[in-house]
Length: 126
Image (cartoon, rainbow, N blue to C red; front, top):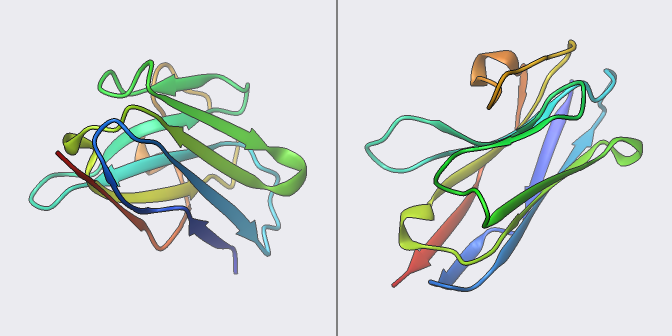
């Protein structure tokens, strides 16, 4: 059973920064692809940032220039550095990992991922 454990969420004022981390426990598959998704109340889940099996990084237009995704394959971990946070970034953030190679043009879709974290809340106040 693969487990994804997230940390780093919290409440901050607009303009501040947060760094989310995701560690894969009992991860028996190679880290083919990992990504971050978020869901706000009343809205559908959306991709935030992903890394495909070729190491290609992609970002949602709404976070480009502010967020940076990084992956440490040796540690099976994933991070999301979030700078210049805005109230519209408020959401539950989920870490995801694939069990097969994933190649994406732009953001990888949520359907590409088998394993998901429990979610960590990010709240940005104006």
